[in-house]
Length: 405
View 1: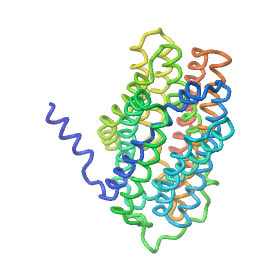
View 2: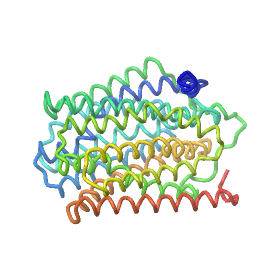
View 3: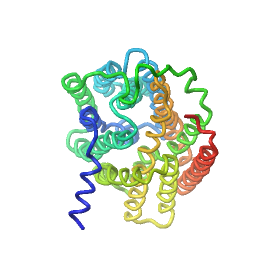
View 4: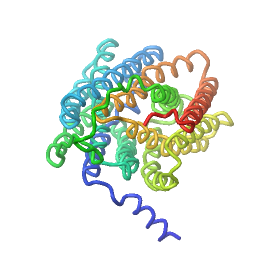
């Protein structure tokens, strides 16, 4: 039984392009340094003594930078190619991560957070566009999962190491590590990866797409559903860590371990789970709304009592929601994109989470400030149900042949 499971696990990695492996390694190095983000709310309240209202607005600046970065990343990627765009993003965001620690007052921090997130998020649509050029339909979802696996391995190590660094050296050490790892990732990329602008499944005879991604109504509906999904999901990276600390009294180190568990779990199970569902050939949307259902239950368990075990159950449910929903959401966007418009589609895909960042963190903190934790978690659960119904409706439209090819 164990041998068969191991064999199936290895099978899920076979047949992936070598470029996808290199891109995953570059992403791993970059994301291993992303330690500031899970601890940003704690840094701002404990180190900088900002109020929850101020933290909410700083997190809104984070989201605004993410929106601007995702939009610019798509535009720049379509113009100069994803490779140069990624190099630019890694180098400049690395420098600004280091500089952000020197911001002192409220407005300086808002400006620096906006700039560093803008530069960092230029990378996302460019990396998706690059991945599309290295893959075809037969390995695209698994290649996407490989990149996400690298992200989650990085996020698994990042918060755990970040919690230790804060405990040992203080918050400023996070900014140095974040910046240096971004620049190291850029160096590795230049050494091992070469640009390739055309997808493996494209031919020179293929016409350029004439319709803008911004006119694809079904895809825009999908993006709207993802914005709602992101609103609930992103609580796990701002208000939930604050909840762990404030309501349960967990230390930064303990919060880091709990957050790291998410990355570790996703790292272990995502590729086999995606490989299993991919073979069923049921399309992408059903798995996205299955993820939304699991996210709904992750908030529900926080309401049934007050015990640390419930936090672990909630984190486990959220992790499986992430494992199932995100690779297939990414695959849906990639498969829908046209030649010449990959940057547009992937910019819109990235924008869904960037817009989520604008409203999720601030909205979450404002809800907690006004109504407390329980009402806030009920609100997030209802948002998840709205996502389920929206995606189910889109799936029904797809069945009736309104989906554009």
